[in-house]
Length: 624
Ligand code: M6R
Image 1 (cartoon, rainbow, N blue to C red):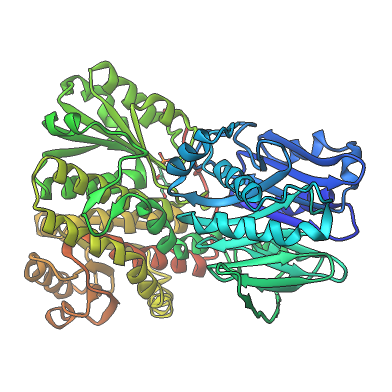
Image 2: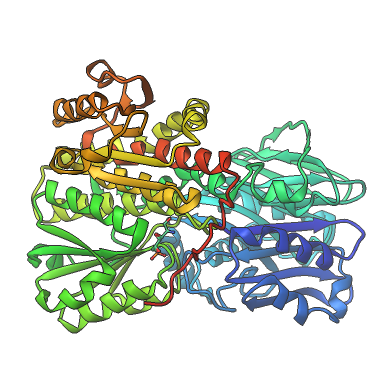
């Protein structure tokens, strides 16, 4: 989510910053900018709405390219639509302090309100801008605004102002800050968002990841959460947020820059699968109050009255997003609200059965899927209110929907959706619990139980990912199979469909997802000796029935791979197991999907398929 670059040294900073931004564009590319200082022109700043090439073109002949210190940013919008005004860097009221930021400041509205009262003027809709005004405020209160001169004397003031501002922030951030009055230093800080320092000879770099500076240096220091760095051309010093010094040893990076963009993973898909703990965290962040069991509405602004009055929910989506919608349906129903789900392409003609009592939830990673947009228009014409669950700020869907819940998963590059899917499911849980609380369908104590368990999910996903080796071995064993079957019941049925879809998309092999109970009504006929059948058999009230279905498949020669948890394993007899951690039954799709994504990935890898850009597919389908 967003790419940051920073440079201080003796070379033309802008060239290095812009080149670094091009390498970070995979992190987001809806707007970008650079800021720097030259002795002749003071602080300068250039931003564009669009890609880094456009920025490069407008500053091609700019004399300001001569500065030797600067910061840069390429943005994936989270707060505020993609536009030049919302592009980073952002400045304080006097255009003296300038910042680039990656992450989400959860309490920005609170802070903004206070700053507005003390006369600060805001130029953007971003959460980031409050940070730079807060720093300005702290500099003022430290009462040394630079009258005594520029440079080294003011450096402690700059450091302390940023440190004090950080103390007031809640949320996630990686940021780099420049103050015109301290032209010999950059400040960097990290909390729950990556930031790395590149150590050069007479020059130093800051970036969201090493790919931005690998061609200049391979020596790097990865900041930890809660740390700041004071970066000068000949030195870097590290501190914690209390202002105490910390030590860091540098590491030598062995990757080339393409490997680095993918974080060392072979494909974006694998990287995105591994980013899922963070995706869930980002979707939940600021929305769940663990102790109150309530959900913050700041962003979606859904009136409680609307939630109380609706008679049902209709979910519409396509592809993987549709599978998230199916999970959503089970969750809403579990909390006592009737829900149905439809392919957007099928829903349009049925939209006439919709009225204002039905609440529409449209799910779309891109927010640009033509089928989904068309269905939303039809639903609105029938008088329904629409909430969009999307990953893409400023997308058409966000403009057409009445309410928006962002998943904040960051750009998904792999055509096969993985981290966006998990974000969509997490958003469904947030909404369904919230609706249940407002409608009085669950006790607070129960809501708290779900919320507390949801908050554990990122760590459980990490534990599931640690099983990658086992999954890769199983996939290698079956890589030559021409057919795959995925079976599950109830809330994991959509995950069986999703597992099959992943294999089809990236391996071009036939795969079917089936409701396990339906197998005996016909599809069991396709099972042949040696056919791989992946069965989701985690602890649930349906486990004994799933166990029967597994036996039925085995009896016809299927090679069953059972996705189990520690407790369900003893009830399932299968030649192969993939174990996921135990969680509440209703939340289990957030874990069971992980091995299926990895399984599909390793099958495609063994088949040497073009995993990130599978044949015949596009990331966003903008035709009906
Ligand atoms: O951008 P959207 O979520 O609206 O896209 C919907 C589908 O086209 C998408 O999920 C597609 O099925 C993916 N390639 C699945 O991996």
